[in-house]
Amino acid sequence: MRTTLGTANAGDDVRAAIHRLGPKFERDYIAHTTLAHWADIVGDMIARRVRAVAVRDGKLFLYAPDATWKNEMRMSAPEIIQRVNNYAGGRLVKEIAFARTMRPVSMDAEEDGDAETPFAYARALIRTGLSDAEIAAGAQLAESVSDEKLAVKIRRAYQTTRKAKRLKEQRGFLPCPTCGRMVDGVCHDCRRSEERRVRREVRAILQREPWAKLADVVQRVPSCDALLLGSERADLVRRIAGETDYTAQDSENARLLTMLHRGLPPEEVTPKKIQSTFWELRNELITTREFWEEMKKRKGSKKKL
Image (cartoon, rainbow, N blue to C red; front, side):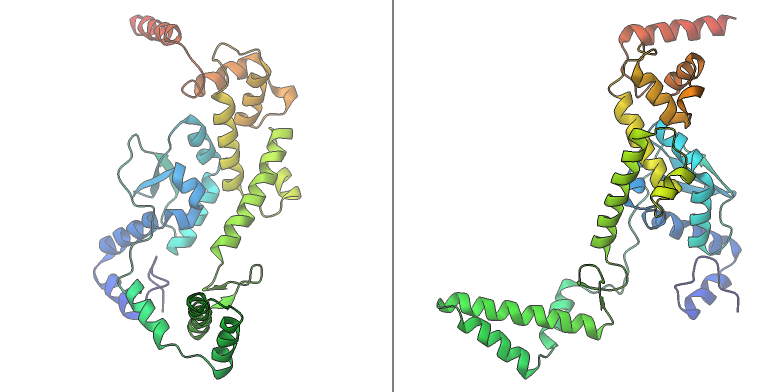
């Protein structure tokens, strides 16, 4: 039986119910679910900077805070579209577009009505039994402390830790191969740690070779992808632009920004390309009141023509 788009993780009854409500409802449901899980699709770091606003007519509308992030999203569009469609389970979007305003769209997954409350977890923990050997080990650990109150706390802490481990084992949790923590699926702490390591390596490459393409970076950092490279490039561009005056178009920073923003090697950087790059990044660069007044005059003279 064909799986209803965007409902691969739902039960058969849910999929059938959604399908029976008609194609429009089904499509709206898929779009809503995809937007709600934007952070799962692109990662927390990008989701904090770029919002997924809406899906309409095969377009994914994004809100990017500035020209730098818009540029990176355009460059990463094929991978974004593929990830979104993979998550949805079908061809939900064909292209990306940019929204002028940001509607309040939650980046967190929708709350699960069946999610366990802290009280329910505590009750399940109390009901979890320990073996005689585990109880004896806790008592032996407590006996090594002369302070009676402290000994009670140590025994309880040991028993709670063992019960929590036992409860997770009963629920199918497995030890993370890296840190040993009992986890349900992926260990998010280790994943974040690994991502930070990869980002440091990618950032170091871009600082040495600002023109580096994805294929060049992947040869040295195999786990890098287009979105991660794009986000690191965007952050570097914003940082350097924030330290550079708009009029300093003959500076080393000007060449560096042009190589980063456009992915150009040093020999292809020209004054015209620097000028074009600075205009695109004008809102990120250091400017003066006189600069904006001059821009207004130029705009007014163009309208008269």
